[in-house]
Length: 116
Image (cartoon, rainbow, N blue to C red; front, top):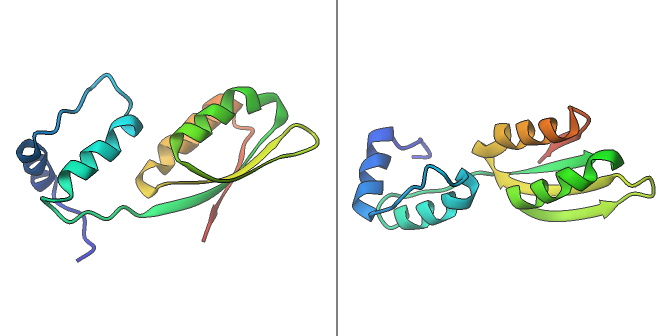
């Protein structure tokens, strides 16, 4: 039906699958394991979004590794001025976290654009 599952249904499926969620680990490190455990119990599809990112040279040292770890890096290019251009694919539900982390690391000096 393409509608989201109710919270209670997801919680019951997590219990039935015996999934352990560690409150001290980041969500992005656990989400794939949880989804794979739930797929046999409830139909799950995750919408993906592609985002073009430009990080200025003075922030690439800190931000590059974070970007690579947040999703699937589809394309990257280093510019002559030291800035970095890339296209990353992430789950649509993680967009806010992605933007927050990049803005924190670059003090708001990052350019992003959602690609179709």
